[in-house]
Length: 409
Image 1 (tube, rainbow, N blue to C red):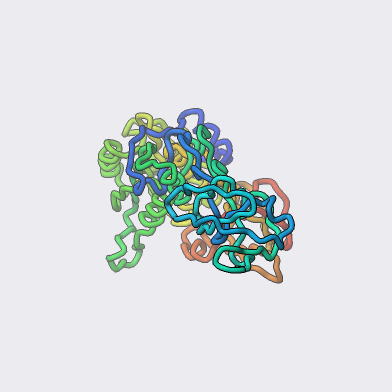
Image 2: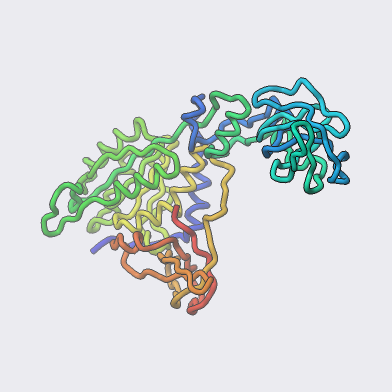
């Protein structure tokens, strides 16, 4: 029979205990060209050394004017010149004067508003008349309105999306200092596991965890190094762990946590010299989780069932990797939604349950439809949009109860 866990920590207890033993930090920084910075995490605050925009500029095609001249918008204005793109005007706007200006053009001295060309009537080659009044600074982006010189525009710990990289380009940065990307070894154990290209014999199953874990790691912005499939033998696994520990910043091992009366992963971790901090968590799926440390690096033993491995990654590994990436400023929007249960759930008797759900919209209301299946059934994850957590000791959650759905990336 599989070994029994004598004491299971609640997920929050396991996290707290491991946090006391290991604090995830980046291992250093590097400077990369701006076009290689997408998805990386900023290592230093960015302070603007210029105003953006550096001049008052028009947001429309039209005419630069003085707003005070058109309080009575039937007043005729004389065209004093034309603003050209990429040039600062050498002329100024006087009383009852206007200048043709393109979108993005610099306002001439004296102008404090722009009227859209759709709201202008040409009286002749030299004069225009407005068809509506215009307010001061209408259709104008002021100098420094976007960014002011000396302002901290980006904080260290920010993941650089296209918009952040665009801002850096607008400030004239051609390279940026970012944290080094953590390297994560992925090891899959199991005598019954074969590669996807192999046709499984009776009792065998194709490897899925290498691919799900690699995808999750890359999705966070880290580098995954798959080590392939390792048989359930301590010495063989120990040899692979030694190889991985030379270069990896984190090691994930799936499977092998309950092989008969033995626990191959725990034995190999101990033989490697690692300190096992947590072994066994009151979470469903994911009970045989191992959290260990070796030479300042986290070693995580995940269950072999594909669903369990993904759930444990989400609960324990994600935060560790975010810390190792240097990600301190997280954007939570879109990560969680409220929905009504389409069927009752619970209660969770001994272990916190992470129930997969699909989201459906019915008459403008979001519903969470539980997808019930065992931890080895990967299609329960394929069909799901997120997870609903059912805490231990709670009551039944009836159909129609509003719940938080933690969305998958």
